[in-house]
Length: 320
Image 1 (tube, one colour):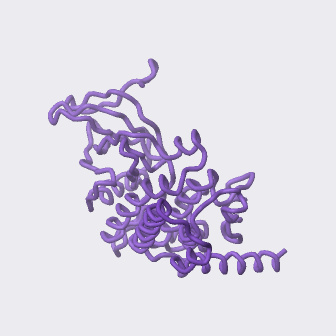
Image 2 (cartoon, one colour):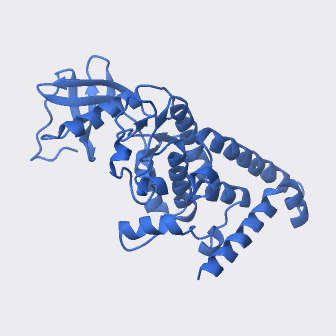
Image 3 (tube, helix red, strand yellow):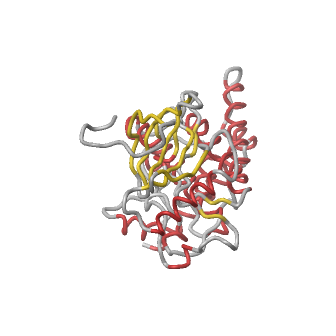
């Protein structure tokens, strides 16, 4: 809703401003009606007094968001300027931001987490295939739609993996959100698709546990923890998570990029397998009970996770 003291942005008569949706580092987002197309859209207007560097970031969002299409990534439709004001026309996505859901409901079930995050991974797989790295994945940039599937928003600081793009990460600037950014982003190093798989793991961790992977009193302390520590196991937080899914999340959260999934496509394949095993287990449990040994025989990842937990526990103990 627009506040009485706010004046709507100057835009072509084609667009009727309906509501202010939010504000980010680059611009202010409004819900509007496109009179010509008779549809609702989201319009991001560049903030007044923005620097030329900010406009380049604004233009990069258009280039990144319009360079590929996936039904679970919000479309970027048009970049234009009206009376000196740059603006982006984007798809309006109905639903509720994932961060609001977590704040209200706490942790989500593994089934709900997979239903939200698998489409997000599929959209990122398409982006990665087009040479796009999001670099700022976080729950507030994921909209949970009425069908309970996730949709990715905001490619505002996306990096395009080609020789022609300005290499912002090589200037020592840090881009991203401290709770979800990868260790290489914290170190202001060159990034690739693996920084997105780290952030996807951080989001899944918060969905399943109700808290971010690392917690501290300040953003700086959070970032330092991320460079040095693995997050707590779900069992230590009294959360029941299938061992295979826990292994996937912790692989995403490896400090060293070479130990993570290379891209969202690799991650998606493992999530598909876990979902299939979960469904199979649910169906079988209705007709027969399973012993612990038969569970491990069916899913050898259970024993692998147990070994991983033991190894990490030994490493943590030796470092204390």
